[in-house]
Structures are given as structure tokens and as C-alpha cells.
Length: 308
Image: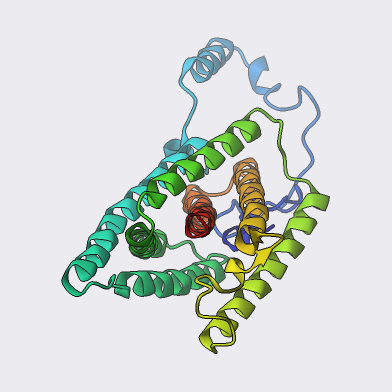
């Protein structure tokens, strides 16, 4: 599993003999199914019960199927609505972050970086808290707060990039929507699925990329790299091609595959009969991946624009 948001038993394959694998799951132990015809056979033998039983069964079959609200169980549709709600919060605070950053540039000639920094730090702290506490209790309020902080970060960094490279935000947004849309379509059609072998490869690549990012930050902060390299090692060229473009393409692939794993984990949670509140964790996991994808595409386009 790549996305730390899904580091919860509710999204893992369950042993059918143990249905109490996560908080809120039905308690009890597994019992083998009764032999065919054993359940209810005695009651139907009583005189006068046939008509009532048939009417009850007919009512059950003709009534609409129960949804997430009625069953208090996680569903794909309910998770989609929760995801849309979180992105709604993100968009609202992203507008605030954008205006805040642009206002600083209008008054001082320098983009205001406070929303960018506050959003990044707040989002990181909340992501860690959500991840490490969700095994005991899912707290939707923390996830809403995370979406708000991520909005500040996305809005702030987008405004900064737009000031330096006009038009890059629209390009990055359209590219992100295209990648998410294609990935979702391929997953829904069954043409793309997560596999154990590919998951291990992507996990190793993600760890290596994290190390690369940390190294790049240290080299930039310590002044080891040439200040003319705007993105540090990303701006270095290999055979005339910026390293950030080469790595970025691979990272976009990793993010897209992470989305596939996110979708797969959500389906697993539904199959496990996880409580409805776990849909918030599924929505949180998708937001983490989509924001990562957007930032990577934004950086790729900025590097290409700076290389013109």
C-alpha cells in the first residue's frame, strides 16, 4: 500500500473468521453457514405463517436497496460525495491563499509566501495526526481541517508559480484533471488494476524519490548548488533535458498508479463492510494523491517554461 492514508485494517483484506478487525466493525466470531434449507424451514411449517412470511419477503425484494445512510456502511458513492466535499473546502481556501499571495506581490513586488508555508506545515502535521490516530478513531473534523490547509498551500504555491510563469496554473490543472480522469476510467473499466509486484516497485521508487527530494532541499539550503538552478537538481540537464522533466514524468506515473491503489483500497473497504465514517479516510487518501500529482505537474511545466 503506497498511500499512508490507507494504513488501516479497514482497507486490507480480512480473514472471514474475524469480522472485528477494525473499530466499529460488527463484533463476534465466524460461524459456518447453515446447511441449505435449515434456516426458517420449521417456521414455514406452522399453519397460517406462509402468507405472512411470503408478504414479508415480497416487501423486502420490492423495497429500494439500502444505501450508506441506512446501513451505516462505507460505499463507493458515499466516498465520492465525501471526496467532492473535501475538494470543495480545498477550493475555497485555495482562493483565499491565492488572493493573499497576490496581494503581497501587488504591495511589495514579492509574492507573499505565508499561506504557502502555513498550508504546507499545517497540512503535513494534520496528515500525520490523521494517519496515526485513524486506527483507533476516524475524526472527520481533522480531515476537513487538512483540506483547508491544503487549499492554502495549493492556492499560495499556484499564485506564486502563476506570477513567475503566467498561464502555468491552467495548464497544470487541465493536465491533472486529464490524468485523474483517464486513470479513473481505466480502473472503472477493469483494464488497470494494482498488482503486488508493481506495488512493490512503485513503493521502492517512491522511497528513492523522497530521498532525492530531501537531498535536493539540503543542497539548496546549504548553498552547495548554483543559485541559478531555480529548482536545484531538478534544473540540472542530462543530454540537454532538465532532470526535473525526466524524473517528473516517472513521478506522474507513480502518482497515477497510486490513484489506482487508492481506488482499489476503497473498494476493499466497501467489500469489508467498513463503517461509513471510513469513507472520509478514502476521500482523504485521494486528496493526498491528487495534490501531489498537481504539484509535480506544476513543477514540470515551470521547468519547461524556464527552459524556453
